Amino acid sequence: MSLDDAEVRRLTIDLLTAPTARDLQRRIGASNLSNGCDYCLACNLSGDFRETPMLDRAWGGRVVGTALGLLLEERINELHPAFLAEHRMLLGELGTYGKVFSTTDLVIPDERHALDWKNTTTAKLALILDAVQKFQGLEPIYGRLHAVHKAKPISEKAYEKELAKNLYKITGYYGQLQLYGMGLWSEGIPVDRLSNVYICRDSTMWWDNSGQDGYMDPGKFHGTAVVSFDYDAEYAEAMWNRGLYIWNALEDGASVNDFAHSEHCFPCGLDARGSQKHVEETPHIPANPVTEVTFGAAA
Image (cartoon, rainbow, N blue to C red; front, side):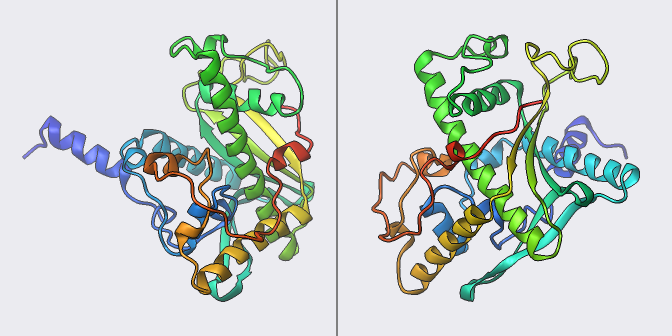
């Protein structure tokens, strides 16, 4: 007997939302260690990965990101067999917590370069790139009145708030990449450059056709963009030591509630638990480390 439409729809949704190995992960990795919220990192180290019903329900973007990653991995293996796609590495041993592994999307050994794909939307990417510009002391490329925001107009106050939130996000991505670099160097794969590659799931990619008009025009909004950093071994070590400090504090009897919530942490904002005190003598992590690095130009 054939399936009815409701059953076909349910089958499709079940296939799209089936958990991946990464979804089932219950050990921390680079993305956890680079989380700017001490409270959330303490929770992660304690086994609480801070799932939020709101994010779990909105699964569409996550699935598109997974699909993009699989497609890129397949094409890298086919077209560039010397590249390392979905490369899993050992970051180190975090005290008694044990070994910490992580996976970066792409390593190009001959170029000493590692990349991580970031699935996003045009409106979000405009804010990310504006945040990069602002914290370099430059004028935003797009601004709140750009056409990418027309579907959802953004006020001046909301725009400034979004820039601050995106700085926080970029800082986390920066730390994540630095930890990847640390892991790669430790296994004998030196890298000097690290990149986040943003791919807009809602872009037609009209201006992203190599060799055609508009491809290199900075006045056009491109559906793919790159933000790059140099590898900073000192920063990677500081990120690692911060995680080790929090783990040791937990082992010594500290509660997760002894650690500070970040102002821009999305799960903590949903919890609305209010501010918590800082654990004293936390190893130094620059408050705005993204301002202490040189950004590569956005493509």
